[in-house]
Image (tube, rainbow, N blue to C red):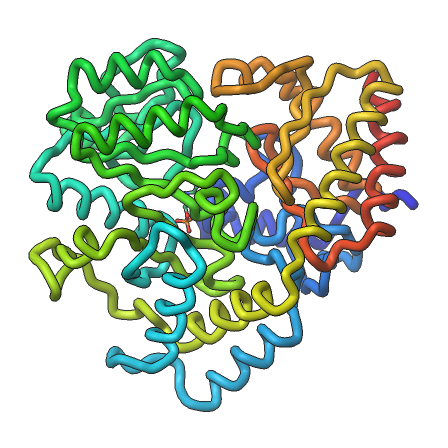
Length: 432
Ligand SMILES: *Cc1c(COP(=O)(O)O)cnc(C)c1O
C-alpha cells in the first residue's frame, strides 16, 4: 500500500526546526541531504516499526542508526529504564550498575579487559586515540578512507583516493595541525599498510579502523588485510584500535573481533551498548587501560559518564542479547532480505552489489564488487535517491544515503522481510 507522497506535518515541523536548529536537525545524517526532500519527523516506535507525525507507519531499517538491535521499545529495556528512574537520574558518584555493565562488556568482548564508559561513539574514539598516544609516547596515527569515527578533529580527514596521503582536514574549523599526524590509507589495501609501516612504523601510535565498515556503506575486510594489520601493529608496538561502535554486539555478541577472530588492543563501542540512550565506551588490554586517569596519567572524564539510566538500558540490552541469542535469526532474516533485494534488482535489470555482514547490509547501485571508498563511490547516488523515496512511499524506512548500512533487528519477522522485498520489486521496476 502506497502512502500519499506529501507529509504535511513533517514539512511544517522541518520549516519550524530550521529556524531554531542549524539545518533543522541535531545531526546532519538525518537531514535527507543526500536524497533530497523533507526528513520524516517521528512520533513513536514499536518493535520493527516507526510512526511519523502524519500517522504513517514504516518498517524501520535504521534502528536509530544501530542501537535498536532488539527493535523499538523492547519491554525488558523499557522496564529497566523505568526502574532506574525510580532511584534518580544522575549522582556523579559511583553506582553498582556501572561495574555490572563494565564486567559484562569485559566478559563479552574478547579484546576488553577493562573498560571506561563515555557518552557517545565520538568520545570513545577521541579518548582511545589520546590513550594510544599517551601509552606509546608517539603522535602519528593511521585511519582508512571511508571509515567514520565520529567528529573527532584528528579523524575528520578527507578520504584520500587510493594514494597514501598525509591528511588534510575535511571540515572548516579543524586546524591543519590536528590532522597533520593522521595518515589516510585505502581500505583493504595490504601493500599500503606494508608501505606505511616500512616508512613510519616506529612512529605510529595507533591504527584505527572499522573492522567491518558501515560508514561508506557496508564493506567487508579481506582476510589478509586485518591479519596484516594485526601483525604489523604487534611488530611495531602500534596500538590496533577496532572501532566497533557500529559492529559491537551487532555482527556477533562479541562484535567483529569475535566474528573474524582477530583481537585488537583497544576497542571503541557505542550505539547498541546504550540501547537507545547516550553511551559510548572504550576498553582493551589492562596494561593500556591502566594509563587512563585516575589509574594513570592520560586524562579523560565525564560529568554524566556511566549515567544510571543509560547503564540500566545498556545492561538490559546486553543481557537480553545473551538470553535470547538472536544471531541465527538475524542472519537468516538479513540473508532473506539480501537474496530478495538482489533478485528484485536482477529482475529489473538494475546493476546492484549487496554487501552484508550479519544483520548489517548495503545495496550499492553499481555492479561492484565494492571493497573500498573508490569502488563504493562508483554507485549511482541519483538512482539511490529515487530508490529511497520510492521505498519510503511504500512504508519502508531505509538509511537516507547510499553510504550507510541498513540494520535488521530481532523484531523483524519473515513477514516484514517479505513485505519489504515485495515493495522493492515494485520500486526497482519503476527505476529502470
Ligand atoms: C556512529 C559511529 C561513530 C560515532 O558515534 P556517535 O555516538 O555518533 O558519536 C563512531 N564510529 C563508528 C564506526 C560509528 O558507526
